[in-house]
Image: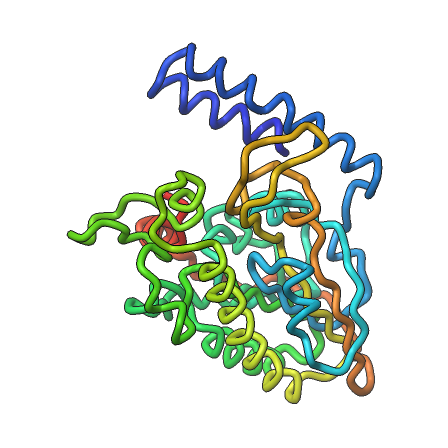
Length: 315
């Protein structure tokens, strides 16, 4: 999957910037791929989430293992897994492309799922929350996903259930985080879209410190965990809280060192990006899971997907 992604990006770069820039980009990926290979030798190839044992899988987008471990106060057992992706698109591609899971309902807040056509026959049903986008916050609030998950649990009581929350992924929606300049996309005084917070920090010209961004990031996690805590009271069976990937906040890649990195680039497998929480909660009897023909799915318009991806910093 990573090779296909890189070839696609190389084709786009060749058309827009020429062969010299493509060559420079390819050279930059050589040390990353060497680091990836060493990481794989040490940690394995990663976990296919559908092969794991759970009835409800709650995915927190861009949640680092260390941050989760410091903040989780629920009753349960904390383990970790190696994610198959360092970004949402890589995680979704490697777990779900060319597969069928007609015993599973996916409650979704991530625009990449419809972008990859995973809402068309991959699952028994996809409950898409993208239409409930909060224009002010430029994301989907966790309560929206929690409410949709509770309804899906009642409607599809013989299905495995995945709920994909967007937090703690930026934009930051906590009280302190919302007041930070440059934490979303409008970094210029006139409000023009320029870059995202991770590129802003990586540039070295950010007017906000890494520590303040970390605090806003933690606040986002607390906001989503509060909704997860309430949701757990409505779910039966075995629940696992996990993440699709983590996030870099100034770490350097290794063993071949790099400059300080921020964000969650595709195809960079390092501890902060692909070691994710796997928090297990046992609650009552297990559900009897059955497969059924997929429901007809109303797809999300491409224009709307592009707009949501831009708000989340992917354009």
